[in-house]
Image (cartoon, rainbow, N blue to C red):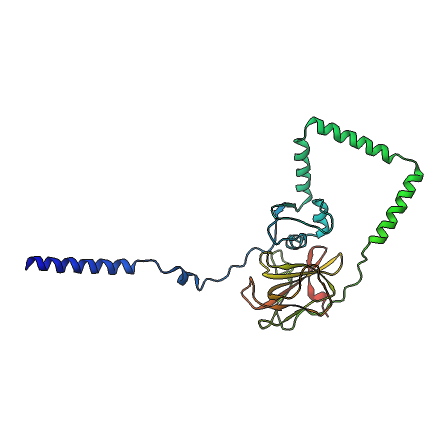
Length: 274
């Protein structure tokens, strides 16, 4: 009898311990993540340099850093069509460029220094030519500049989407740098002016599915948080052409974020739109 009782007691204790361990077990990972809100990542690139990631272009980096793409191209000796590659370090400021040059020359050997001096003397000698050659060279340069120039014709703007403007441009340092136009998922996003697609992707943090159009050397426009992109990079688009569909990529609301950049700096779109 006592032996049978001991068996029952042991069985009861085992069941009790199993129940406790089940109640203390961690919840499934999926149940913890189902209602986690999407975190909006940092939008702007800051600092003196930036390491290129997959999907970046010089235009997208310049846009995020609020720089003129031509300034970055000049700082980094990147010729048109401004090809960059993952892992490349892009300088964002002149001070970073000076530091890079100082470090390069400091680490150079005496042999390299002598070579540079010789090249400089040679260059100076070549420049010290008769005035006639100088005149001819200037004329040639003028012809090349005139031939390759891209005059900044006036940009005629139109609204990029229908809907309610729920956020407006702010001049504050961390303020909203565009217009937020709310509409339903899949509503049309239109090119606000004629231009060329210089970026189409989702590598730029904080903008989701993004399109950047270049209208001339001074003006860019951006269309962010789209659900679908309908154009590709290097594609020419007409004013009013459908280029995307409104969505909520990398955003908590379904709306278009529309920005206009003048020489890299964000400007108030309301001052340009009819």
